[in-house]
Each structure stands twice: as structure tokens, then as C-alpha cells.
Image (cartoon, rainbow, N blue to C red; front, side, top):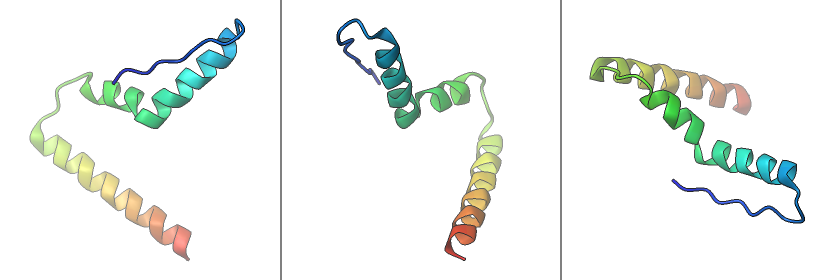
Length: 64
């Protein structure tokens, strides 16, 4: 996962903003945090189940 951003007209702030947006879209920071520590397979399943419940509640709330 390599993101490249071109700095135009010396606008480093704009390039930094674009880089942050690309990283957020790619899920890079989330991936790094996930891989920071080893998690057991059971922990991963519990987290996935918790995430699925949260997403289903969010979807249900948005449809009603």
C-alpha cells in the first residue's frame, strides 16, 4: 500500500491534507493499529462479531 502525493506550487499543507485523506480511504491507520499487537483467533472472531452487530444496528437505524 503505497500512496503518492504530488506537491504543487510548494503547497505542502494541501499535499499533507490529500495524503491524510488517501490514508483514511485506504484504511492504512486502521490496519497499522490492528497489526500493532498479536490477537488470538478467538479475539478476532469476537471483534468481528461485535463489529457485525454494530454495523447491523447502524444499518437498521439508517433505514428507519
